[in-house]
Image 1 (tube, helix red, strand yellow):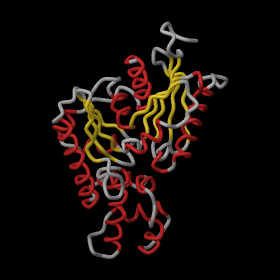
Image 2 (cartoon, rainbow, N blue to C red):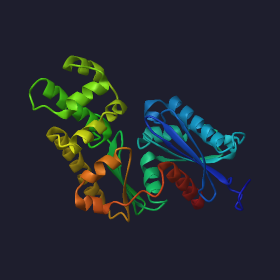
Image 3 (cartoon, rainbow, N blue to C red):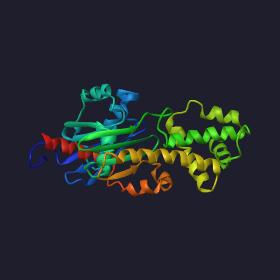
Image 4 (tube, rainbow, N blue to C red):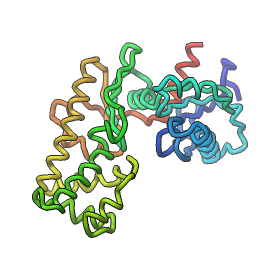
Length: 298
């Protein structure tokens, strides 16, 4: 059913596509979530066909979950935020996609995360998940800090913490640094018992693999392990620096989002913790809010 303006349906799709999964929600005109769906990777940097297939599949799953499986995608407006489309060539490629939706409004995953965290308003976010970065949207201007990718960037991320754990455990196994509680836990987690087997287990693994090791660093640090505490303090100080850099843009609000946020936030400096406010909604909702904002401009 069309709304009073006749421009769009009374339901919207919001999609957040990243390197590991694509998350979709169906919401009503008054932003009530009716259904959700999750599919595979949605970053076009790692494959255009994979990304577009994941977008369509997650949308279909969300509609089914909402009891709207018979609703054609051609009748639904979608807001989509994707990792990778900060690169102009990928933004152009996705914009030219012959998508199946009624209308598609495309943005970066960082912008929809920020809009979601601040309920469609301007602000800043620090993202600490598998990767890490800072992003602000103030006076309609975007500022990115980091977001350079693992392993050459993404300091303070889950992947970075996992990699540091592996490096320090190898040094400890070689007797070059003092013993760390992480050694026993990492060897047990990966079902190996020596340095050679450890190297074989971790060689060539992606960021998502290393990110799964991050919690053992925090567990060890919280139990007083000196080496683990040094890793956590180094990663936390980087996130402190990102937050302080973003604060120069004078964002009305700042939030921290991502799966590692609950672990790292207590380790941040007091002045940085004081800057933070809880995110108000998810990146998927931010994608819906972005679409609605774009519609309002037409």
